[in-house]
Image 1: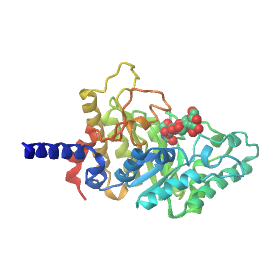
Image 2: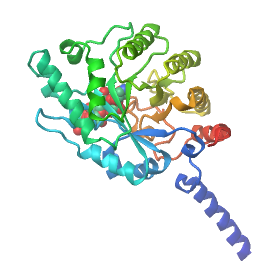
Image 3: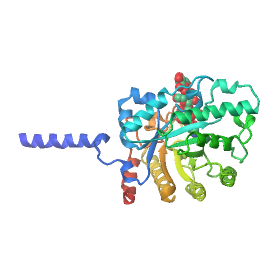
Image 4: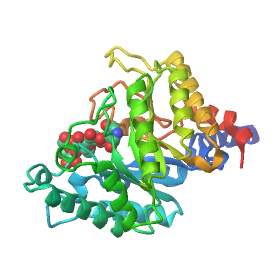
Length: 348
Ligand code: G3I
């Protein structure tokens, strides 16, 4: 009787042990032939041990979700704040992870002093060049690649109005040149979202790449953000990947998440059907990435770690959204486990 009890206790202990993801010896990143990344909130690394543990074990590439953007890293004309970015870099370096920089130039999360900046074209150029080169130089040798310019085109393929477009002619090309001058080894990306189903936007980006090649502007990669949902078209997504890869540039699925409740239905239940739909979308995305020629595979980065950390819940205020591979308690979801099984055949 006593030995039966001991045996049952052993079984229960083993079951509980297996439920803790930290005890799984093989991670999804281990079965992939390319880096698997996440965007990270360094504040959560400090405050939440589960977050820290998951971020530190599941990924081999990290991106700052917000802390390297202009508003945070360059809060005043004469002041840069590298504290949180440096913390993230140290965290990654201690674990042999790559760091991807996000983002040098964007129309959003611009510092107030930049919005208020007054000056002629030359003064604007000096200001942006100084921003780019100070940040890139600070992280030279520590950050492998940069989203140099983010989201510059509208859906109709025209240049998005912004303080940069308004004040600096050809600002996208100039930004790449300035970034390259500061760190010639950094892999430089143009990053954007929603090219699927928006042929004019897609074409504008491809035209820009073509033009940059002709002018010897140092662009190395295209970031396809991949903020998609279970309703997104697989064919449209695959076409964007094919066309982007045909440029010969490196490809980064840079901000992946798969929304299950895109209309923000308050009654939404994240049931097995929703989980299955989400899983097939994740599978489709990973398989599309594996179709990219190996030398061009920069990696896949999910936009944060657990469902509770997603911008869709915070920034977009969609409480019933579950877009990532880990739940609120950082347990791997079924999609994570099945991705690992399905992708095993591509083992390194
Ligand atoms: O840090 C402040 C905090 O001090 C303050 O108390 C709080 C009050 O609202 O705001 C906090 O800042 C927020 C920040 O996220 C950190 O949570 C900003 O208001 C909020 O605007 C910001 O949202 C970010 C959003 O970009 C801004 O456009 C999201 O976290 C971030 O995930 C999102 O990321 C972008 C990529 O950079 C580019 N592609 C699209 C992607 C999703 O929008």
